[in-house]
Image (cartoon, rainbow, N blue to C red):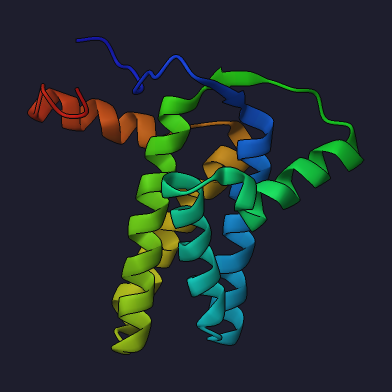
Length: 147
């Protein structure tokens, strides 16, 4: 099996997604700097909005589109499947961070936050999808996953 990302044949602007990953990093760093849990709730709610409601209502999506327009960044279309999978992972990590914060599981929280920060930063800085690599491993173990 060749290494691949989930493919939906629906296209989105990859640069908007990269800018969105920057806002994910920003919210996690703000939480780590302040311990103000509202930042984590905003992050989780935004992932829920993008995944299950309408991304047009997502604060991060709207901010990302605005930043792209202000900075006059070109459109770079990419398949939406990998970005949707990454958002699913982002939601899971956000919920996990909220639980860890509420139960004062500081070591676990810092480990989870570090993993999320590394993954989102790889997207922002290098357009590198860690979710695709995880997807490939899962497909090797469970061939019918996401079919």
